[in-house]
Image 1: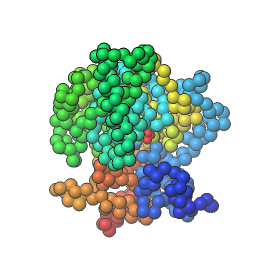
Image 2: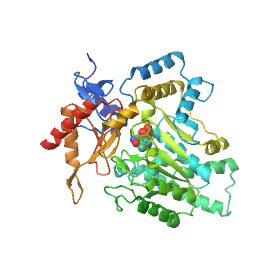
Image 3: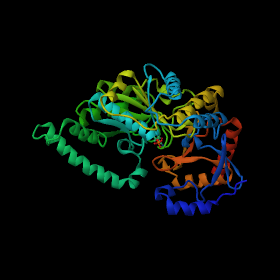
Image 4: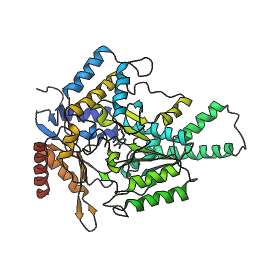
Length: 453
Ligand code: PMP
């Protein structure tokens, strides 16, 4: 039995000692979870909840999967160290296993600690490789919370929290754009040596230059499900908003934070062609869609019939352990040999031992097939969304009702999430070991909740 502090006591401590940004909660009375097992969470009183949102918090194989826990414990007992300094077989073994899950020539792995870091690195590599600055991402995307990824993210909710950062970035951009302009035009070289000049240009590189394309959202988007029309907008953006060349196109295969938005059919193949003609690389953010979550495929991009140049991943890769990765081709990977690049803990022995165990569990327990049979509302496999509106014609977001659904379902013992631009999308992303019985219970709970509301 649990004999730790109560939810109220923890809340008081959080208020005093943790970032105010952490005071965002899904529920009116925040849940104090003290244990997790497979697809279930337990609160301080021992009440069980069906966790249909744990996938978002990285759990793919299920909470505390014994194989993954054992791999972490064994490796922790043997050695934990930086990835960088010495040889260690676990890191290389996991890189090989991961590369074997990717198509074509996507065979070189860089490890990171998070999805943000993975996308930052992917954007940096694309800029170095192409010699171009401009990156195109989608409106309604989420890619992370460091400087470049914050730029690539286009979510209204985040703007309020980061407004000061934006002002700061805009100020720096203006200063450095001016500096670069003067420098490029040979008016002055500032008396800096080449290393110092490179530092400045790298700094500028990481801060700006993102264009947000019209979101190919089949439900709310201006061209409905016409992927080709949205793609044409990207061509226009390149023609009218850039030099004609771009560094990259970065997108999720299904927008997760944005509310489980699937991209209009035909969009990705058409855009990939356009980007490649403009000298850019295509980056697939598989942080949420990767590792068998979509059921039909191991990676989300595969359902669109495209092969990216760079794939980024995190969350499900480590079943809750901080781990991320960028996988690319040997040729593109070369760009990082021209500068100092390393990540002290990205892909350390303990995290990669967990990653290797996750891959084995997904295979052994046929979790991809399991995600495939469970359902298809909007999204794929076990990455589902239900958008609630109060008026079907006007598509008026049912924001308040969405919160009520979340809270009511929690009372019934089922945890789901919310998301989307208007915060009116129910998000269902359970651990991949979710069963048909769990799905029945979840649907019953949702049915009862919606009829009451
Ligand atoms: N990309 C996507 C698609 C994400 O959903 C997230 C996190 N929600 C990230 C990147 C950033 O990952 P992290 O929080 O691990 O930095």
